[in-house]
Image (cartoon, rainbow, N blue to C red; front, top):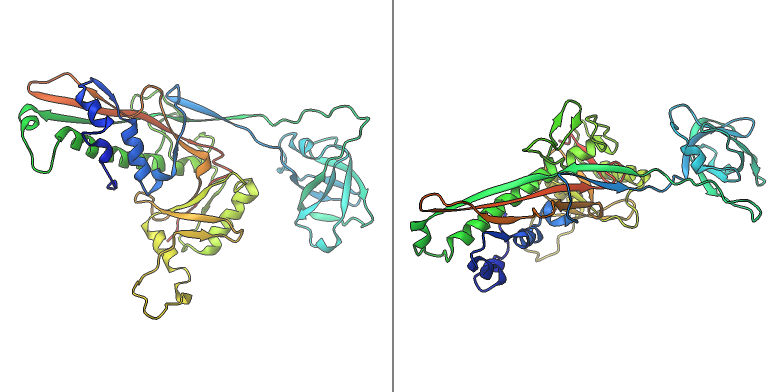
Length: 405
């Protein structure tokens, strides 16, 4: 938890000159930023986002329309959607009249791939189709995944109906992080060995403690709730951390666990990780903007180190012993850095898309130091700031394995 350098706090820098001006309130956000940048665990992989303007802050998420849907092909060359697969008019967004569709997965006779043209998209559960091409269609009573190959449009047709998907609004809450420093007049005036400034030294230590608390909150935080609602109206409010946000992405106090898989006490395996990555892929994650990592604690890091160590060749004269893995190469060719975090629970592995995670300060209340009223011969300072976690597409672009041995 030590930082590589504290040169940014030395007397000859801007930081030192700011302290020497004896201001009552000092912006310390650059100090916290330097500490986070030097961190090799979770916080070093989370960017700082824009300032929020409220203790309950929101962000908007847009989605592209799907190009696949679930359905069965009947004898009359129509495609029906079983009950439970479509709960809104989303099918009409995917396959409008004139669309060319084919089976993507779920059909045994894939060598006899056939195409259908939608003639009527009358409802969200039934498409009337005709054969498109010379390959005869196959009756598929089992549900298959269908894919829209194209949606051609004629010159003489009017513009189609707008199919923009409704935006969704996500939220999280600000959490105050605070420490105090109190230095007596006698202690302040004494020359102490190896300590040039007691105030600067205490600022460094308290900042490292805040970094530790922030790391734990970002990972394990649970938002304050009353009744069945998470709220920000508690004075000592808390943010929702990564693990709980992945389990309850809409903050309705119901754990959907959309991309959360329980290993039921089993050991971490390459197959388990790849299965989770394929689930994220199928949900729309791991796209061209993704920047994923694997976040683990020390227990699962040891498991990574044991992968394939039995087939590693040791060259003659090699003096280094032990095994360490810092990158996981998935079946899809995606490389995921393995990030070891001291506070990650040992039974969990988290796939975290760094491009969709940010730490956001409350405007005007980023990390700062403020001088308090003097008590007797003691000088007191307060270090504090408010931060919240923004995690976009928690049910599509991130995932978690839990209950690992």
